[in-house]
Image (cartoon, rainbow, N blue to C red; front, side, top):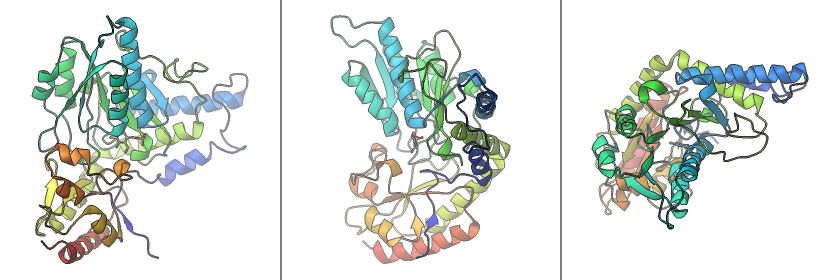
Length: 396
Ligand code: PMP
């Protein structure tokens, strides 16, 4: 059976061959395999050196100090650490008064589940939470944030790029609103690191989560940027051994850290050119299918990251189009219906619903994501395949 063409880079990317080679060297007896915390022999020192080198590479990608990088298992853990860690620290400093909720958290309603679920957990444990609705283009505005602020707001979490829509929030403007009131700002940048240039100081964030497997590094490794400042503190979530300056214990996986470091360096090297190329391919794909009847692009077409294209293939319930039928019919393309992380459940995407789509429109939407290895020929093939399939299937 022929393999489908991969159009799911927003879900995960393959590891770059150069990265895989560096990683493999950190696994076997002849390579750099030791426990980096083993200080009593040169094997350990070498592993530690490789990890610190990788930390520098990762820090450089977001213009941070290496001491501000905490290794995690991915963006999910980084989000949990930032949100629960900041909330626990806040609670320790501001205990419950007569059982009243101590502290208010603001998030956007279209965050990834790895932000929404920990925040819901915090809500259950007594914090007050506001979930901001996006515009119909998927953008969170400073006006919406401003209007939600309370005297006891201590933490705001807004993603830079939405994983389903690809739209980009103005994090600098949003964080400025918070800075004026000494509110901590966390940003889930899993979909933006390696795709747009990021300078954490310019963005003004206190915490930033990201993940290697979104930019041609391995799965199972990510990082949380924690600003070095006396008022930016998180409580430990994984105890044991005091690794990562006591913020996240556990033996570091040298091959994973080295893989993320190498991917960060490769990504930084040709980020602008590569993103322009990928944007052109994505635009070509859209131009090739935009003229199909009842087709609509979801999310902002201008404030958007390279690579992601989310398309609704039906306008109303009478259109005989739904995502699952389309996915089956488009079996020569590997794409996502809504968010990949959601597709275990058949309920319509909460992100698409939040920007105003009906259940039927959301269910008839697909996310195509283009990446480093996508070729113009693959785009041509996809256009043909989509046009043929949709013309056949989606007649009102
Ligand atoms: N946040 C966003 C915006 C994502 O797209 C993802 C991955 N789908 C995550 C967080 C979770 O990242 P990880 O797979 O590294 O846990």
